[in-house]
Length: 179
View 1 (cartoon, helix red, strand yellow):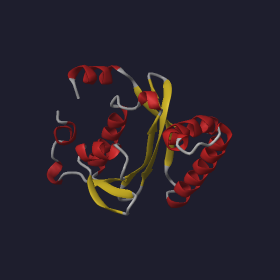
View 2: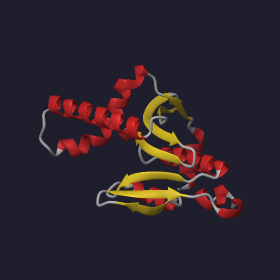
View 3: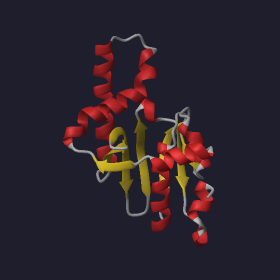
């Protein structure tokens, strides 16, 4: 990252707070934003797209709740403005990033990287691996690789990745953030 980008990244305030029932429309909006390009290619009307997004969002939420009942859904804000969402499960032997989604205007500015770096720091302190699944075609897979995640399995569509704390407490910032 260029030094001016680092300065801009450090100047903004990224915050995360647990989502409430009042956030449901915003969370659906974030989910719709990550599916927008895909749906545009289908030729569906806006009403069809909206119905599809709500159905898929509900199915996804129920799936996460069934598999990871203690997962926390949070709203990500940048300088006090809601910018995305993150879903994290903290288990007895792992931290699992279930989802991280940013509105289009917040993508590509290091915000996701900063959020993941915070989770990596937590994983290093707790001596737990940080795990996630990523769509193989998702450009975020390259970010995860740069941050030290290693492919551990998956299927034709998804890659399961893991970041494990270094043995002997190697300096986290030097290892992951290059500082």
